Image (cartoon, rainbow, N blue to C red; front, side):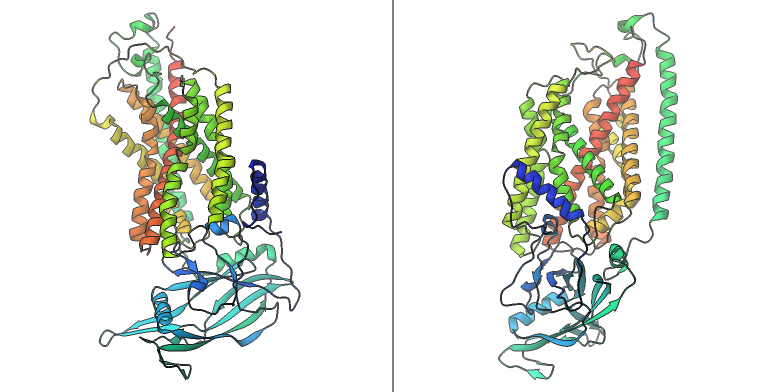
Length: 609
């Protein structure tokens, strides 16, 4: 079975079939069996600065040994999105056959090529090879800084690589590369120096690349080989101190939720007891001499401005809530193999297209309930609310990658595939969901009638203003995920393999619970001040968590990472803005529905007939 992007069928049904095949390719864990002496293909993939994980270039952009005609491997969508550009190499590796210092090629480097290698080594370029879906990492060269007066700056190129491969039975378990007991070839300022006893004049330099292969038997089975890769430490490990921080966060969040719920229920109990005493006066008489949230019962269900935009936010937020839940559950079920490059990326693309029906249904259904008339415009707004900023951000980031020659720049075939997924699957499902939601929408369930003339809202104290509520409502959910957020950033923008999806599910549930509880509490305080403008306020109060996440991303970039340069910085901040937007939409939707359920409950509990 081969998952490629080179043969793309057309049409909606064919695209759906392509998605199904893609999912099977991603999540099936077939075993490749070898016999002794069989060829094991080693693919060269990419190179890039060690501290900029998203700034990668094709391996053959460097002056290295390469075949006369480069043959690229057919890649999955997730691999392309991950910046992979695998191509066949000149390394000849046969199953369970050792090789000692075999010549790969001899290169004559020009002065420009030597300077290019020096620059790459000084920027700590590393390379990535792939053997039987196992990534192999190593540094292109060696750099040494020593002394102050006089200062010594040495740059060397690794021209010999030792491949250490572990096997069990007829399958490959693990592979890495080492340069132990190997001396780097010095790259002096300017070409023409003697290298390995061979001096070439005319501003050029001759180097000979060699390699060795050693096979070792392993006790791990093929089904457990991901454990071996997870324990390997070419990149630094930073996720050790995990459980204590998570437990501390859980305890604080539980105490916070308990405090909010107990206090709010006691206050509501007193309010119900006080308001339901005056039952004889009728609904209209309550406006005389009373205050609090009951006095605005004829205005609290007054529909807000910008109804179409509000419903679009709720619809897209529900879509991302469904998408995030599905991704975490799929990860818990073990559907993302660490050896399948870009599996989560592919799953996210497919699920985003398939869950578009959720956004259309939720948005158009609620838009019809609150007497919205322009439902066609509502569907268009819903489908473009996130996809338009995503396309704009991707266009800028992809253009910079294309300008720099990075492999993160998507090829035309992948762009057409993603565009086709949205045009043929995402947008039609949004329309279908919107039509179904419009036809199945009932009436808006409001326990109280709304007057034609709006009640005047009294002047509010400073601590009930929108900015204060956004600060409180955003900070508390952010504090619930701040610890886990670091590990997620270290995974997405670093080299880590995230595996604790059970903890992630717990933190995700706590995030939604805190957001809902805080929104209910802030909505109650708002209504107690006789301010019935809770519709947008409930979305913005907890949705402001996205702003805190973006601020944290700036902190992470400056203080927790070594990223730099235009390419890496543009991608980091561009996609961090989109991440903040996703959290704003998702938490804004959750907090709105929690506030609406709370308001319906308290006004339905009053005796106003």
